[in-house]
Image 1 (cartoon, rainbow, N blue to C red):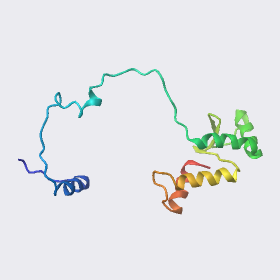
Image 2 (cartoon, helix red, strand yellow):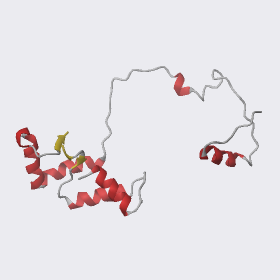
Image 3 (spheres, rainbow, N blue to C red):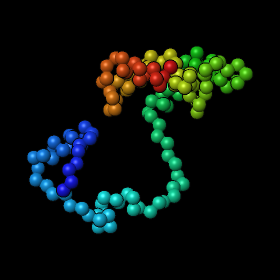
Image 4 (tube, helix red, strand yellow):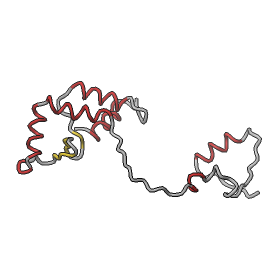
Length: 140
């Protein structure tokens, strides 16, 4: 058997887990091993349907625009391209400022977004500075 070096931390970690086990590696040809390449052997199917995934809070942001007079004024200016404020855009009904979503003056919605970004499954509970940067990156 050839001697192989473990180059990555992942390889080293897997190797240490396999050390105490009794196992034998057996090569199977791709034709005989249907489970290994099942996805690569599926014929290509043309899909004519398209779906869009939208976060639940997106509708709440749009609804919050109705009760905020400042946001209503901004929406009116954005609708009339001749008086559109600089750095603001309107994308699918959402007001964006420099590419970030405008939240408006809804304190309850702001709190909900902070809680969602702080306690989300990916990178949640990261502390105040990280949560603040995450919010600042996406929202204005």
